[in-house]
Image (cartoon, rainbow, N blue to C red; front, side):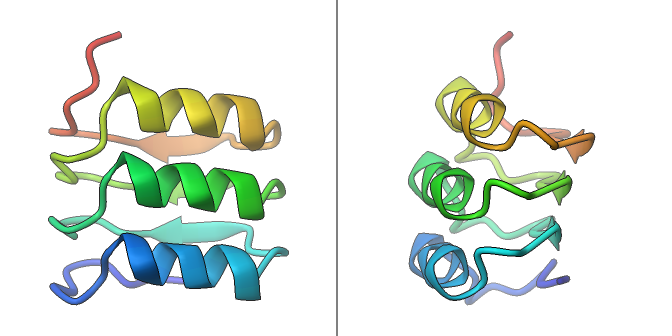
Length: 88
């Protein structure tokens, strides 16, 4: 699923994806400035089979969101958080 560079993508949409698409395996939300830790955390809780996530330039994603992915998506292999506010 690719929703990159779409201004309307936000935490609410990620919550809907998590609820409606629990078998989601791949998602790109690059350049979606309205995506934050809350949306990523909801995605991690609702889509445990997620294997690929690209969140390049999602500046509202921090270590909190990355930690939620690490705990909730054990099969996550490919991820990119370039320019996210990830400290560690």
